[in-house]
Length: 42
Picture 1 (cartoon, rainbow, N blue to C red):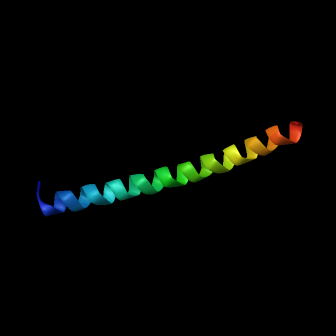
Picture 2: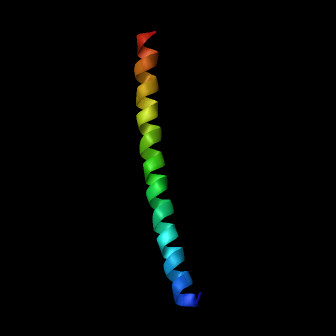
C-alpha cells in the first residue's frame, strides 16, 4: 500500500468517524427527549 492509498483510506475513515459522531449526537438527543417524555408521565 503506497502513501496515496493510505491518505485516501485515512480521509475515508475520518469522514466515516465524523458521520458516526453526528449520528451518535442525534441519537443522544432523541434519547434525551424520550426520557423526558417518560419522566413527565410519572
